[in-house]
Length: 398
Image 1: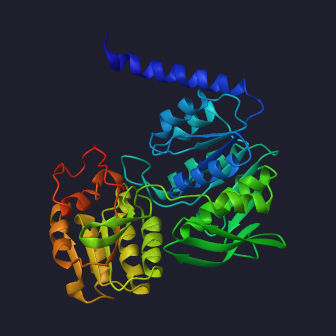
Image 2 (image 1 turned 135 degrees about the vertical axis):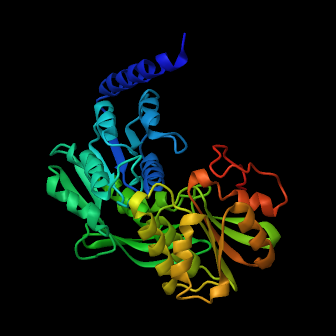
Image 3 (image 1 turned 120 degrees about the vertical axis):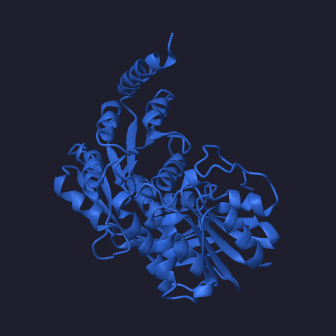
């Protein structure tokens, strides 16, 4: 029998089974995480911090959310906390997720024009509308945790009936806030504050943007009656995910700030800021195209190029057609011969072969399906798939 014919009924049946399996576990608290960026790191932070006190299960960071949520629920046993990543890239997908599981606690990390192309949402407003559904679905007894620093997230409070908790860097308006942020190769430290209390957080995660992930996780933990001391202790044990701003040894005795798993304007700028804050004699940024931005593609790439004004780079290597906009803007702030546009990873690897020196720190950023991590393998003299959108995952992480 045709497997395609069976596929849809199979997934529908599994989703229904997951729905009723979750209903048979009334003691489980379901936490949902959505947003255009930071979802995975925030989901992992929440699960690890809650997991230090409660038996916790989370969605697999490597699986598509559409299938991930029911699969995770069906693995529920005697767990106390269920942490689900609610990713959407088509109108109506949040309704499918909510049919399966309505969370008692929701986190919205940030909104950006990712999946704003016509094959997906088509506009930023439609993205906001879809992601707002999750926050609006929480009952009055629940909690919705919003990133105050993102105006698109903040406005969601208008349709929320649950108790709203804001997190961010505004010590006046945020319920959970951060100050005195310091970034280094050993990790990031900051003061975590809630009301009139604060505590020093030291984590192995590198980059100021991780502070927001931890703040969101801390807010969730507070709703589950964890203390600041318990949160700080658990946060200290967090480690970077591979390819998500992890520091790794690179070819030619260089150091790589590897951020090659996902790319959008907000995460790229956060990575560049981290590169700027880390000490090194020479710094090189290697940036691939940001996919699925649709009509916001030029605007998003130019936004990254304009940010170069705020940091110091020795070289900027751009990869792919859309990154011409990054290069065009960056040349206003850097020597033109230090901004190099390349058509693909092979040309980029050739450029890097000539400019990288021992001790250089370089930032590698690109969308998952562009596989910019192939550059590392090419510099090591290894063979890679020439297909620009190959679905193979390259195991280059150390």
